[in-house]
Image 1 (spheres, rainbow over the protein chains, first blue to last red):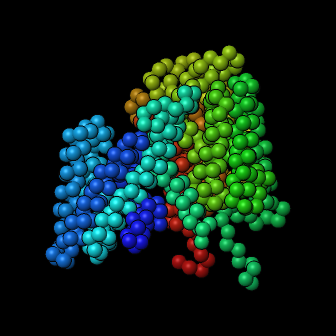
Image 2 (tube, rainbow over the protein chains, first blue to last red):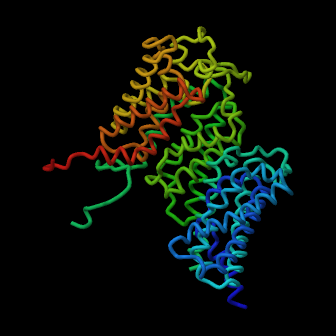
Length: 197
Length: 314
């Protein structure tokens, strides 16, 4: 049981996909304009990671080694399609805001990375917890980045204006601002890690 | 023998009585005439922008050095130059927090993130200006009319040109002396040239970058004129905008410009081409800051291909 908790928590801090593994930066940079986008993307990606981790861990002995990547992609694409159709049905506004980045979860390196590096070698239960942890870590990172960007770049949180006289820093809401925020956060977390050791 | 080999980041000095801080402070002195004329033209609000820009740059530098437990290097004057150049690149009527935020960004992101003086890739003052330009374009493009202390707004000559308006009422003398809308430190060409001649005379900047930069802009805008080839108003393009300020004081920054003479000329021509292209066909009326920043990014590449021949080798 303790081992499972370790698998779960390592994705949140020790091996955070965004700030430590630095994977999946494309959706992180693109959709972190507002908090609701960030959370929506995080949930969709978590669903895909968990689902594909479980299926790939179950199928790991059946998948031939030489064509494993295409097999993983088929599994991942299935879950992405489920996530996309669900999102389209129940939250069309979010789907419109995220746009092409929902189908692009297929090529998100976190998902493929976990399948290749973890699920294809570990047991199904371990993979399940790993998937939840990684998804949660990704979601938390997205919440942090998109929260900072929405607040500084638009002066809002969840679309509500917080401080009336605050003049938003427009550039933070643009792609260059995403790179700036992620770079500074990465530096900050590396600093914390260095202090610890 | 070991102690004689010193590997360090630029600026490099070999004279005995020179030091980085002496050069920096003399550059500050050489910038004073342009600022003084700017204050005279635009009124006291320009002075406030300059003071706030400089003070907040110095405070940011000191605070970050304290925070990272490094040696305090505020007195070397480089932060003062950054704040000063940033303020010179702002319109006179901006809200008071704009120079503060800009100076903070210049020093923190433009300089200290890379490791401080000598390590920064981009000219810090221009990083700050471009950040402000992208964030608050409304304030950055509202210019006050010259010699009119009622804060009447007026577009810059280059902005008028971009909109295709007439420029009959501005003479070359007005442009040369600074009687036009524009940023605080860029308007008076005469004052800028006085400072530049001082720096050239002292040997702190070489003529290669400014000359090749200005000549390229002149030739390019003359060739690609509004009424067909070889009909451009090259003198107008040289005298307006921030070209003189940029060419003499920002493109020549030791840290972010190439090391060799050949590199200097390539750097100047590249900046000139980019400036002229942005002015003639780009989305912005003025392109000096973007041109210099882009060439800053190309500086390591230029340095690699313009290495001086080592004596005795082919």
